[in-house]
Image (tube, rainbow, N blue to C red; front, side, top):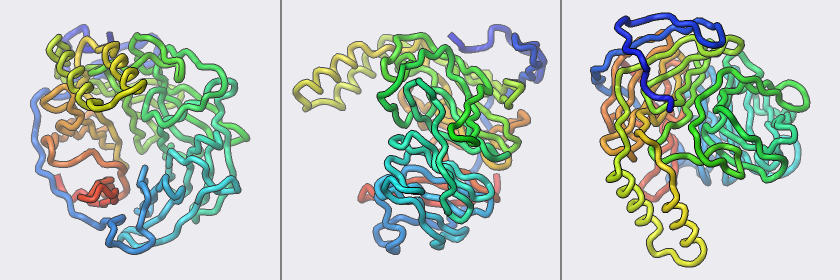
Amino acid sequence: MKSTCIARWTMATCLLLAPSAHAQEIIQLPAEDRWLAPDFEEVYRIGSLSGEEWEQFGYVYEVAFDGAGQLYILDVQSSLITVAGPNGEFRRTFGGPGEGPGEFLSPLTLSVFRDGRVVVGDTDHLAYHLFGASGEFEGRVGWGFGDERPVLGGTLPDPRGDALFSAVGWQFRSVTYIGDTRSHTSRAVERITLTGEDATRDTVAEGWLPEGGESIYTGLPQVKAFGSHMLLGVLPDGSVAFSDSTAYTVEIARPGSGVWRILRRPLQPIPVTGRMINAERDRLRERIAGRSGALAGYENERIDNLPFSEEVAILRGLRASWDGEIWVQRHGEEPIDDFGPIDILTMDGRYLGSYQTGAVDMPAAFGPDGLIAFIETDELDVREVVVRRIRSR
């Protein structure tokens, strides 16, 4: 199990020689929390039922900013991308349902480059749609899985352009039941180059893959309750920050070099007990109470056979800002709670402090000049987008 460091480091920073012969800088962050006062100003919100016609979204799935502070909103119900200006004003829409150029069948990922170019992953087209900065369609690039079964995960743009980052097991979006299932030996962080007829994928770093029974659909082991999450963010210099273990560890890697820096906090994952296992199974059974028939039988069997991790993963969320901050979310008071405190780290290895549980949600997107976007649900269960700005810390 990839967990806490075997040795106890007494220095703040040290160097070791990795098996790949690349030097890795290990930075030990402080254990004590330093609480930050949330200081955000609301810039605008769009998507409410009382708003203008252009902002009557069906289902907001993903949002992203470009370098001019424009917000891009992917509505998977209408298959449209809507662009709002820095003050929330309408700019344009593009996309739409269909099989023609620039039209979507099943758009499930949105990546926006700093210059305004857009890439949309379409699970039915098995392709990435490419759009210019004004929304004009520029072409499609195949996913590049070859004979493998295509599994679509979330994507993040490379700030240097013409490529995306993704990771095996991160933000699973869809699987298409064609081709051969690939047996994975790691949760690889990949750089996806978008030139040519089909994308090419290069491994940036090998993420740890817990053992377990293999899924016949994705080739990945079945996810264990309370186990480690594959988490990924892209930094402004084109490096990636990721976490793959139950311990508090954030690794920073760059294409061609692999992992070159590791950030750690000496927080220990708690062991999973029999009481936790029974409570989690009871919670899951309560969610399906009242169901009947074959589906209920399948769900009960799945709960009975659900594998559990030996310890509770500390980290539940990770995102990177445009200025190199790494926002890391820990679990809450209960092991099942994914929405605990959010720590703010920097890519050069500083701990800036933490927001207490409930002070702020993990942003859905970061933009320039401290912009952050959230997808929120109102009292009528309608999704709207709220854009705020970080004023101070």
